[in-house]
Length: 103
Figure: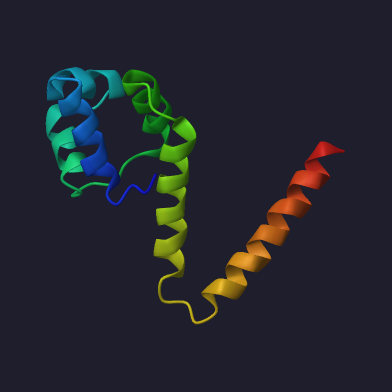
């Protein structure tokens, strides 16, 4: 699934579940105005919110995390001339670190 706008997706989930803004805000331990800004894309989604959102709306946490992290990486690399090379090197580094941590 492609999530174009994570805040908008969260709003859609909340509205589909007929959940008031205040209830989700309480679950996320943020105020209603912060959640409203998050849903409108005026504030960034916090990584720690994703497991709560996934559990609350019974959606795949992995999809939320992948959408969130891919946006973070894309934002960081948007203006880099060697973005693709950096991603390839990062993939190799992840493999190395994973292998190293298993020992």
